[in-house]
Image (tube, rainbow, N blue to C red; front, top):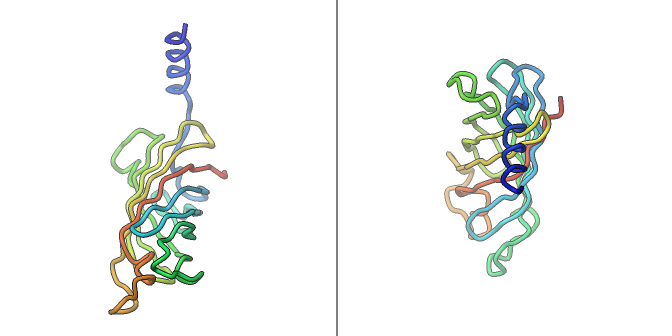
Length: 163
C-alpha cells in the first residue's frame, strides 16, 4: 500500500506545472540556513525579474551561532547584499522546474559572487542552495570576527514564488 501511495505522489508531482524562473516581473522570496566557518545563521533573500534571464535582488544574513572566542558583535554577525543574477535554466534547456543562476553581489562586507540552484515542486514552493564567495574584501587585513561573511559560505532552504 505504501508503494502505491508513493507512486501516485511521484506521478502527481511530475505533472505539476511549476516554473523556477519566469522572467520579467518574476518575484521570489527565499529563507534558509547560512553555513560558514566559525558561524551559522539565517539567510533571507528576494529576487525580482528584470528580463527573460536577469534578476536583481537583496539578501541578508544574520549569524546566530558564532564561536565565542571570536567575540563577534552585531556588525560582525550581520550582512546585507544587493545582488544580480543570470538565470540559465531556460538557456541550457533544463527542466522548467529547475534553475541554475550565477550572480554577483555588493555587500556591506565585500564584493562577491555566488552560484545557486532552485527546484520548484509546485507553482509556489521549492528548495534552493547557493554557494557564495568573496571576490574583493574592503580591507587588506581582517580581524578574526571580520572574516565572518568574508569567506565561502553555503545557503540552503525554501524558495517561494510570490507572483
